[in-house]
Amino acid sequence: MIRHIVLFTAKDAAQVDKMIEGLSVLTTIPHARRLEVARNRKTDQLGNEIDVVVYGEFDNEADLAAYKAHDLYQESISRVRPLRELRFAADYNVSTDVRFV
Image 1: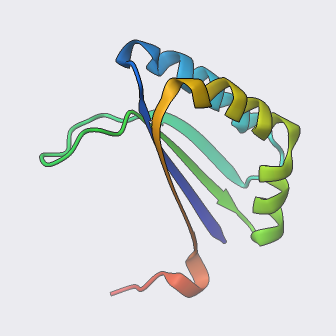
Image 2: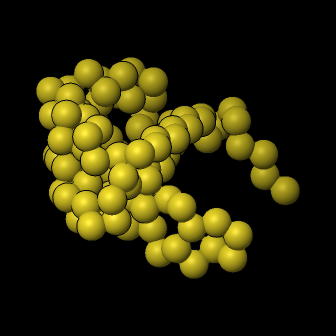
């Protein structure tokens, strides 16, 4: 399983709801096992710059690639890119990349 995590900061705090609305389009793309869009609670003691989190789970690389190639993914980009300051993304394979203690 591939986990896909994307973190966003808004150019303007007043636009966070609009960012969430634009990112929520992603939840209707059928290739994800699970996809969540959430406002960061900003409760970390060291850093609270992140405004919005996108968390996705995909069965394999092909499903993740199909998700990113979907028309709604491009629509979400066009809606959110003008509103965001920064975007950080990370993908990892749970079966090979995660170290359990």
